Amino acid sequence: MKTGTENPAPTSALPSRWGFAVASGILGWVLDAFSFFVLVFVVDALAKGFHVDKSSVVWSITLTLATRPLGALVFGALADRYGRRRPLIACVVSFTIFTALTPFAPSYTAFIVVRALYGVAMGGYWGIGASLVMESSPTRWRGLFSGILQAGYALGYLLAAVAVRVMEPSFGWQSIFLASVVVAVFVVLLAMLSPEPAAFERTRASSLAVILRSFIDNRKTFAYLVLLMTVITCLSHGTQDLYPDFLKSVHGFSGAMVSNLAILYNVGAILGALVIGHLSQRIGRRRSILLALGICTVALWPWAFGSSLGVIAVGAFVLQFGVQGVFGVVPAHLNELSPSGARSLFAGVVYQLGMLCGAPCVGIEFWLRSVFGYSRALTLFEVCTIAALFLTCLFGPERHGRDLAA
Image (tube, rainbow, N blue to C red; front, side):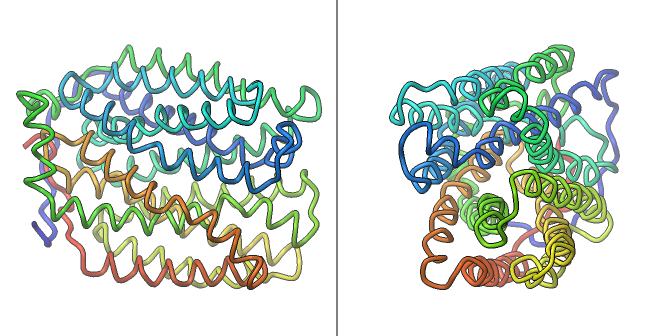
């Protein structure tokens, strides 16, 4: 396991349509996030529609996170053996169909089945999309495109908030789940126009057995990265998924005001991913993550205990700048630490296993609010998360600037 920073490799000749590959990978991740986050804005409507309490709908979020590793395993292995493009298209088509079916499930049981299948489909996307973007983009821009890719997640969250604000009053909350279909068609077209990355062609594994054996050969790196992504999941979903409900329950904000705040703090998230991701190309991946964690720490108090709309807005904006700043480094960091012949599978399974291990965080926070109150529960959980992530990252490996085609 390498622990130092490598000198950036020279940029290899890129195919003429590499921009299509980068665009399809990024836009697909935006769509992935939009499809996930539309649900968090309509928890009350779903609970009423299926005649269950709100905690049952919140549990479906955990279930979605928990089923994602299966998709990463299946689609990631196919992408490492047969190419990035077709598995990526299959993921997009699948999770778009399940998203569209979500509000029309005939029962709560059917709703749970649809969300579990949705988790499998969306779980396959990140490993393929991230490897496609990182392998297709110039080495000197890897940190920037890493930030842009992960900013797509916050952009998807932002667009979900906008869709709730614009579409729900006129067309009903069910219509929001159908909005992803048009974007999915565009992503598929971009992917069809994309070339396979040269890095994949040069490092392509000879068989699925060779791909799967990479987990044994790189087991220490694998274990470390799963731990890293578990804590990052707690940081991200622990500050995002329940926050709209927190704003309504504790501060009594209307749905429109919550949507406005969500738009604002996701602008901060997008900026954080772009700035910290790009900065990581200069100062390294781990130092950039540690810097972002410092920003998160400063913002925790106004985010959770702000007594006025202005203070809450600033706290939420700055906190998500830091949170997505951490995530802006992740695509480059994981791809640089993954074995060459199994990059989509390795990075994808790491990412989604981290999501699985961190999946209970939303339920834990929701339970802690009954013991400590909503504000203290969120703060206590995130203070522990930030401390754990700081230590995990501080002593971890790094291969900054690695040549992915080698």
